[in-house]
Image (cartoon, rainbow, N blue to C red; front, side, top):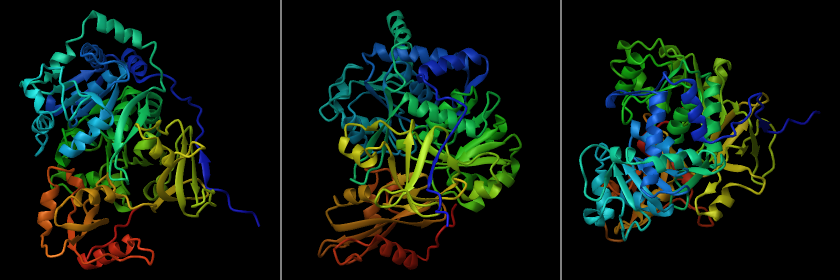
Length: 564
C-alpha cells in the first residue's frame, strides 16, 4: 500500500523575487505610469497621479530627515486611512526609517507600551477618530508638550520621543503640523534621500507591526522591504491586478491587509488605490466602488456582510467589480457565494496568513473551481514553503490535522527586541509556527480548522484572551478572570469574560466593561460577562476553556458559525 503523501508544499514561479527596496520600486512605477491615478481619497478631495504621489513622497522623506531622524530610527503613525498615511509609508521607506503601525483603536496604556517598546523617535497622529481624542491622550502621556519646542520634546513617560506631528491645519502646542514637515526639507536633505537610494538594502527592517501576545503584551513583528514588497506583489498577481485596475481599500492601513496587500500590491502593478472613508463604512464602500468604477475590493467577512445587507445595496452599480480578497478571519461559505453572485466579484479569492509572515502564505486562485475558492484558503504562494506538523514537529500525512508552519522570504526578521519570543515562534530550521491547526488535501489546498491556542478573531482583529485577562486583573473587585471567544453572527466571534469576584464584592457586567473603556481597544472589551464562583479545571489545575465555551454557548443560546 502506497503511504499517503506528506503535508508539505512549496510555491514555484517563473517570476523572480523582487530584489530591491520599496523606494526603488516606487520610483520605477512613477516612471512607468506617471499620468495614471495612484491614489484617490474622496473624503479628502485627493486625486493624485503616480508622478504627484512620487513628488510628495520625496518632499516628505526630505522633511523627515530635516527633523533629525536617521536611517533605522522608528517613526510611529497613529491615524485612520488617509492620504497622509500612505505618504508616511513610502517616505519613511525612502528615508530608511522604520514605520511603526499603531492601531487606531489603541488607548493610553497600549500607546505608551508601543512607543516605548520600539523607542519611537517621532509620532505622526490624527487629531481624533470617532470617540478617541488622540491629542488629549498624547498630551496626557507627555504633558511636557505644552511647553516644548516642536521637534524637541523631552518626556518622562516617553523618553525616546522627540517629534510629534499632527494632521490638519490647527496648531497644538509642542507639535509640528504635517504640511510644514512635508515642505521642511532643503537641498541637503533631498540630496541625502537620493544618496540613500543607493545604500539602503532590501533586507533592512522597514516596518514594525504589533500583534497581540499570549504573554499579555503585544509583540512587534519586524518586517523588511523584501518581506512586504514581495508579498504585496505576489498577492496582487494572484488576483491578476494590472495598471488598469482600481482597488477599493476599506480595510485599515495599519494592518498588513491595507498597507501590504493593498498599497504595495497596487504600487508594484501601477494600479489605483481608493480609500472610501477614514474608517469602514459599508455605504461609503458601495458609493466609492460605483463612483470610482473600482474593479477590485478587499475586506474581512464582516465588511462584505455589512455591504451585502445594507438597505441601499440594490441602488448601486457594482458591475465594474471583477476580483478582490476576503481574508482576516474565517470566511463563511455562504458569504463567499453571495459576494460572487451579488457583487459581480466572480474572481474573488481567499487569502490566509499572519502579520509575522508579511502576511499571506496561501491564497486561492481566480480560476480555482468555485467550491475550492469558497471552502479552502487556497494553495501555497510563490517562493514560500508550507508544512503541517504534529506536536513533535513531524510532518503529518495529507488530510491529517496539525500545526501550519511556513518558511521563506515572507517570514519576519523577528519580534523587536525580544529574542526569546522570536525563538519560540521561528524554529532552528527557519519555520514560522503559526499556532493554527490546518489540513492539506491531495492537491495542496489548505483548510484552517482551528487554533492551537485560544486566539479569538473578532471581525478580523486578533485578540489573545490572556492580554484582556491581564488587564481585568487590575480591577479591584476581580479575584480571578478567564476570557474566551464565543460565536457571534456579526463579528464571527465575541469575547466573554468569566469573572470571579473577591469575597463580599458585587459588580455588574456594565461596570466591568466601563473599567475597560478608554484603556484598551474597543474590540478587546468583553461583550459578555458571567460572574462565577470558579472555573472548570483539569485534575492538574488547568482551566478547561473548551468546557467554558460550551457552557457559555448553551447559556446564551448561541450557535456556531459555519465557515470555510
